[in-house]
Image (cartoon, rainbow, N blue to C red; front, side, top):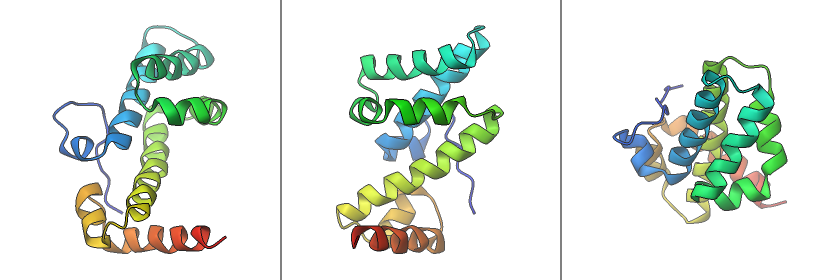
Length: 132
């Protein structure tokens, strides 16, 4: 599996191509900054999510999934483990959105910067869930 740097950086080409990944990168960056500024994990999560909603970053998703996102961010991870879980979860989410819009598999690979095998795996899962 190719690892993609999703650390928030306005010049990151992968983040420029995916508003979802960019949003999640901003969310994690806010969370990590809050922790570094001395907030408890619980307060840091809630503040990061609320700040993103207020700024319009992933607003609809975060409002609809507030508790799930907070629970995920509150798991006892190190920063890198958290970034990896978020990266995988949201690569899958971004791929599903692209499949919903009938993007070809090759274009999904190019935009998300992941292998064809990985995209095909996500596509099979998407097809299975879509038929339910």
